[in-house]
Length: 249
Length: 161
Image (cartoon, rainbow over all chains, first blue to last red; front, top):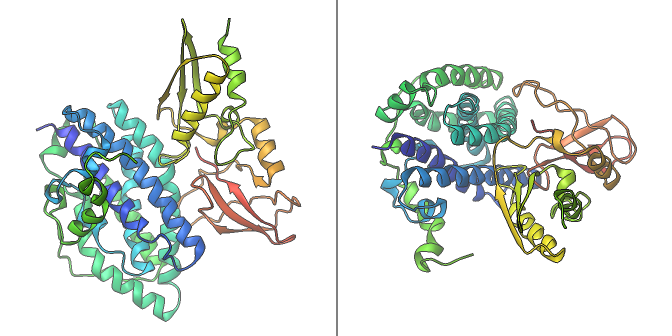
């Protein structure tokens, strides 16, 4: 197996699917500023996906570019974590999902920007600058809603109870990671998890939210086993290219 | 005979599509200009990963140079080193302010979590009594602020580095 291809594909799929999810808010945000903020973040993520999937295509060496990877794969070939394909729910749930993701991506990109793989390092260095703004935004909303009114607190606590089971998969490790960690190309995800735990605990405490004690962990995305939601996302995301093969925008 | 310096001069005539008061040279997205025989190579870098203006900037560069009698132009996009707002020229920052957009303040690296918004003086009246409305403004590179004194709503070109 081409481990670096698989690794970069996973990163790219995370960005693409979460970017698509956020784009669903376009025109539906609770206030104009947040509508614009979510689509801005979506644009950053889709931009990152373009860089990552483009590089994955090069690594694969079968002539697939970013568009081919985004528009012409089936759900089982997608390697994103389950967290990013979960439905938007209310605004609080979207912010909490974003916060879990940003808290993971920031330390990951901090390490990857020093990767011995220069192309991956360049994408990470670029994306890190954007991710810092995303994390600042999402963490502040989690605190504002958690430590807000009785209703906002209850609603985001409910979202936390729902999403918590998907967070552990961010640190899913298999032979792909092991090989690349051993070669010194990527950081160990256990290292990233330590920082993630610290960030999440600090922010959820400030937000007066309670971390669920039910520790059931759902995973599968990294192996292509998805929740039913991904199929619906792809139906919309791939429609044009499936209906009119090879069409150009 | 056209020189690389001439090309830099021509690029001064290409405006940024999103913020037309800046040229692509002011913005710092032109990373290299190279002439080899009759072939001209331009290297550009995006401000943000998803910046939708990059394709248009590329096309405008080719169009401008063709117009100046340089037929063979290729534009390459690179990601590293990553663009920072430090690359906006001093004259570019002055033009932004004049246009009503607050230029980047030099402080992004304070901690991401639990930090107060950056104080950004009002481009209209200069007051520092202002507030952040939203971290994400009309484009990815800008935040939205309002002056508490003169009430002017304005864009802030976010510091990125």
